[in-house]
Image (cartoon, rainbow, N blue to C red; front, top):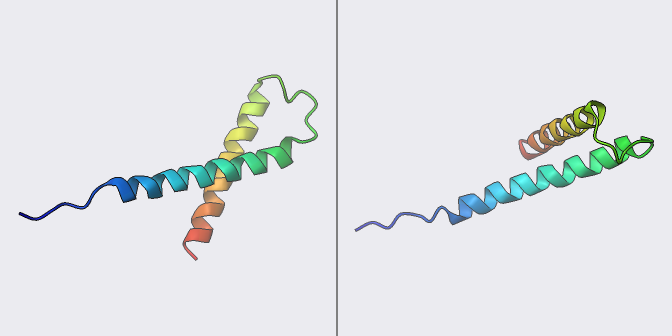
Length: 67
């Protein structure tokens, strides 16, 4: 009977991918929002900026990982 590879390594790779995106997005957001006066208040502008940072972090990650 053939053994099937454990999905655990794939899960770890996915977790690392997500962690990398989150860290990258946080750094980008911190730099972009450093001068924002109302950073403590939730607003559509803040939500858009965070979404944009996540998108940028994904783009950077994909380009770097593809060489």
